[in-house]
Image 1 (spheres, rainbow, N blue to C red):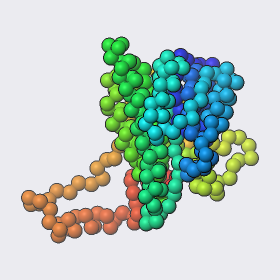
Image 2: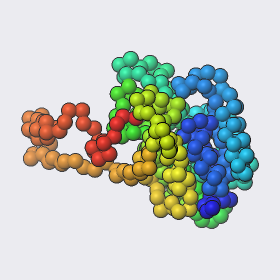
Image 3: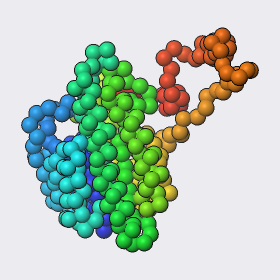
Image 4: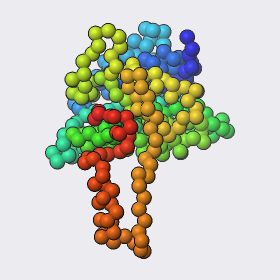
Length: 312
């Protein structure tokens, strides 16, 4: 079997369950040594006592299959613990080569009912958690590049969501965090390219603890792999972590059930020029009102039209 990640090391956050677990196992299958990170709280809303169990179990599974893995049970949204996570990869495996950010929680509520804590906690885990690990991984690669006098090997795969692309009425915090992750990804991609590092984001659709309500009405097949299984997502993460993906940088890919869609950056839908020095209210009414009147109510980005996406 080809081992494109042989000799490389990786961190996968939120890897004790669901997508993260499938991704960690796939990276190990492809030859990477893996730091399995998971804070281990039982509630998908980030509640409950933290436990080493989920991370330790996945690390043990990888070792049982002949791979190399260690567990880390820290909170990636805590700056110090995120720094320790990157340090653990370097201490255990000599360097960090791949960072997969997957950790997240849900605290869903309509925007008119959401509490400050529900907003802050989701932004903290998703967006700040992605930033914290990225910050220390980026510093590691920059130092390695300076020492080497040229580019080094580095891959970042971040986890966004179709909730950002197509909207999700009861998830303003989650959708905002996932949109922020795309912005973080593209900024990081530009900043680290000269060091040999790529950064890409995925929007996965999978049946996990986080999405059990969303996909409750979608039955599992009697035979074969569930179209919503996390195992449909993991191969793309393994590929983006590999040398073969060296030319893919700053991209957003939707993935589920044997399908990958490479998304474009937002494009200009229409352009309007004022016939005088600046627009007046009447002129804006004359050009914008009829333009949007031709579009279906509530329509969002063109991505939703192209993919036929459901809220996820």
